[in-house]
Image (cartoon, rainbow, N blue to C red; front, side):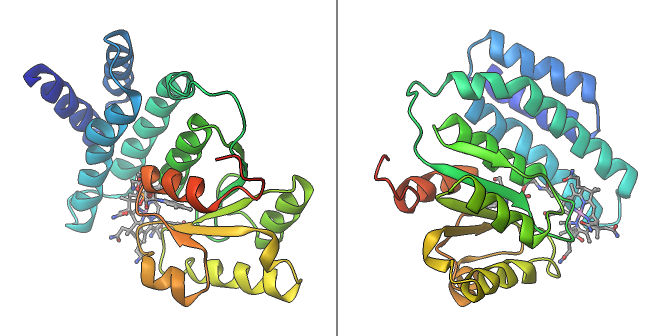
Length: 221
Ligand code: B12
């Protein structure tokens, strides 16, 4: 147990210091020791990017450091993704999801995590990336007859686009056709209810729980 905690600490440390090689090596080690990839992300790596964020807020880190930490998260997710998928035993689709970081916003670490977890939990996920135009979310959701649209926003300015997207769905008479989940650091339950979203998830696990609860039109969950 103690060694597991030590491993988690080393993972966080690798992300904080932007040591991509160490971050990847530790992820591979965790896999070879058969650790649960969800736990590894939640307890090992997320605390690292959060700490980098705190150092940035304190003015001790600047953009280059933050970018290095973000690169570590991406590298680690690439290593862990197959294991996340493999940990999902069922092979039916729980529903179709369109996900992306909203227009004007390039933060994609949290969105990637949510997308990976949804996919690992049996959803068909179409990840549109970051800085996604509002029309594109709607076009794609229509094209694939999605159940859920998941919108990530990390900036107080871009979270306004979550509201805008819901307005656009209403204007086009499509609001009933898709459930909309919102998330991201500045977002909360109150905001979700103010803008008429169907749900707010504080983290990736919560996103999965909500998606299972409210998601599928076809009652597969
Ligand atoms: C890493 C980071 C960056 C990286 C992003 C790299 C990348 N590829 O994503 C870089 C360095 C590029 C960056 C750039 C900028 N950043 Co920045 N960044 C951060 C930082 C430190 C961490 C974000 C993160 O990845 N967290 C870890 C992930 C795992 O958490 P998360 O994103 O919150 O996601 C979780 C939940 O929110 C939830 N979730 C997320 N999305 C969704 C969606 C749904 C549907 C659901 C249900 C749940 C859900 O689940 C996720 C997993 O648990 C935050 C600080 C913070 N406190 O958030 C600042 C922060 C978000 N950035 C900030 C700023 C200002 C910027 C810049 C404008 C800086 C600049 N001057 O250029 C630019 C943005 C440019 C733009 N147009 O987007 C501010 C925002 C302030 C504000 N109030 O708006 C913050 C808060 C830092 C600060 N305190 O000043 N940033």
